[in-house]
Length: 187
Image 1 (cartoon, rainbow, N blue to C red):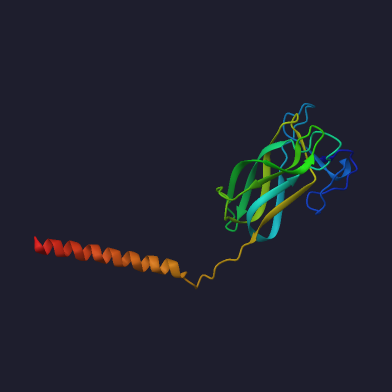
Image 2 (cartoon, rainbow, N blue to C red):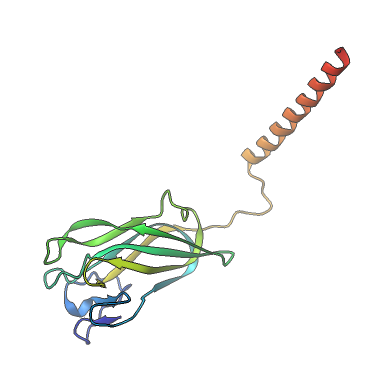
């Protein structure tokens, strides 16, 4: 990664959505037109486990060029509380009213709701395998990850619906056995 001008102060998690070259980070996907070969990945590590709902990616650098908003898809990888990795590729959905110099929205969002990653309690989020539309370059000024802090269930408490299902299942099995015995005796 690099700032556009080499002297930028923007970071991806400082809470400031940048609007200049110096507050945006420039990324390149492998085989960029200038020959640069980099495959960027962004890692977010959290102090507690969270179930992630959605991720917003802000392009920034709105008035100066066409690179912000050029992302079309990426892969999200979650490291869960058992240290198992789960991943899925998502298409990005533009949002907001800020446009790049081509008139395209610069901010993107992706929802984990309804995906294979929904409900996974994770300590880390990795964004990788970026795909874009502008000669394999893209820029990001801020990431926002939304979700709920995971609270582990008390292992000594059995949820009531589960016990009802177990007893209901045993009662049904007992009824089938009793019915079969009764039929055999009558025959």
